[in-house]
Image (cartoon, rainbow, N blue to C red; front, side, top):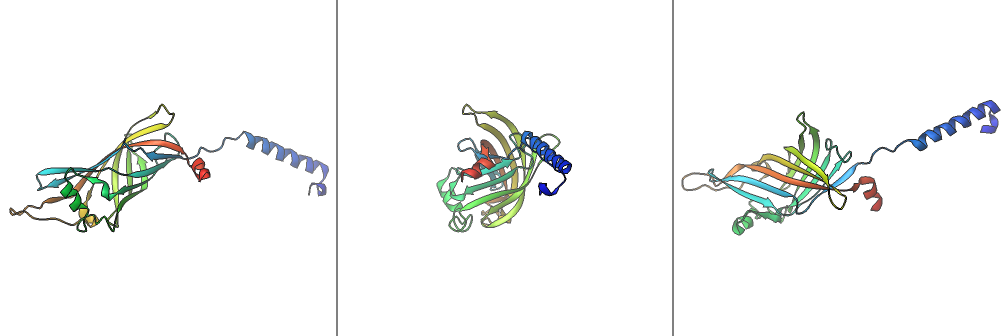
Length: 217
């Protein structure tokens, strides 16, 4: 093709190509997204619900798995969050109650073994904290939920991995998810309240850039 061009035009074209190549060779690649994993042993997922409308029953889920993808190591706005919680890991300090919660009338763990969460929007508020919206699925029913998230800090471990800690709080109406079992006392009081308070202390551990993870699979 160059042979068909006049010598001066060909020289100018070659110079332009060489200059473009030099500029590209010095251009920095865009930063890759960062993959974080929920740290086992450093995370707690707890809930509270009214019992007899007078006292609160507290419980937690002892098994969980989740990932968070962020634009970089410091920016958690627009994060993508995925989490799975095996329902059978529920613990309220009472074996009979835990067994009852796993039955068909409540969580129906045989048919619906996991709860899942998928974020749809994470925004940084003016006070520097975050609001996370997403879809929570329990007993096969998905409903939107909003969590208030406080970033408690980031530090690097002795192994060189970044750890970032968060506290997330929110609430849900259990009836929205088909958790409809209840009973009435002789005095006419409902045994279990409708509203469930959620409180999570989550530690994320940097697990590498998504580009590296994808190439390793």
